Length: 369
Ligand SMILES: Cc1ncc(COP(=O)(O)O)c(C=O)c1O
Image (cartoon, rainbow, N blue to C red):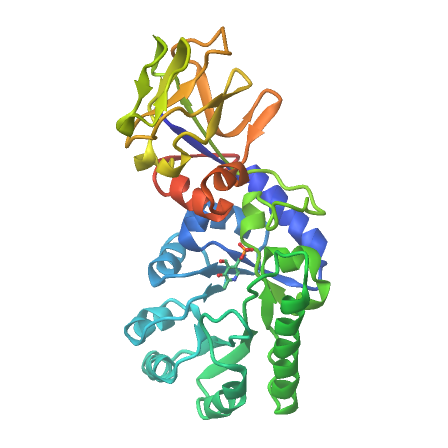
């Protein structure tokens, strides 16, 4: 009843656009964490590997292992770091790790010795995100301590921007200045840090100086602009689409309320389509009385609360509507389109969250494999 499609040809198009934008000298780490933002970790990663992506970035050990089990040999970076108990698997499967904790480094080194392997790490610095990483003033001491472990190579420093998507780049440039100052210090101390990276999608597009050795785009790969209020300088194609069909059409008299809580009451006779989709499909309850869908190329507003499995939309103005008609919840129909940014704007969130919600709650159909 619900068709969630993932267009891998569009994904590959987006990848090429970013490559072109960043230039040939910059490596690309595709962020495929959270099941590739709900788009399917393994199919998405395979499509990117076919484009010769340099690195894949994941959050959890299970994601890294799933990629290795799928036969993917591309370098994989564990973006959130790991816990000491994950060190054995990480080393066994040649995963690279973001580090910021001494006990994790010790666990990795112990495993590298035991398994006769090397371990490649990226040292995480918090330059202003207030999230993971060492404070800048602790980085040089940590690096010096790492010199004691010949089994370990430091690939580079990594940091993350907090507001690179804003037009005003003041804060972002401050973060970049902290990061580049640290890189300089590290190089003076004899570290080559060849693969240092800080750029998310927004910085890929708008801050060439931040591209450094590698960039880490996420949302752009999936076809959404990092700053919905500013059209990106590249052409992005949406990758995810979601459709359903009208389950029932019904005419309601004036004064009739719709759905739980009776939050919508008809003021005149009204034609309503009942759709077999609800919040169990990631179609957020926050869309109640504010979201829209496309039917026969026209917008149909949601009336009343989104239920677990059902949603009602008004189609009084779509005279030809019939039971079984295709309903577009995300994607294009005739000349109009509902984007993840539309869904996000209606509910006060971001496209990222909708992709995760929809993609992780429904079976996916892959196109262009
Ligand atoms: C560490 C890190 N790098 C890169 C990204 C990609 O960011 P974006 O999807 O905005 O390109 C993310 C996304 O959350 C991230 O957490």
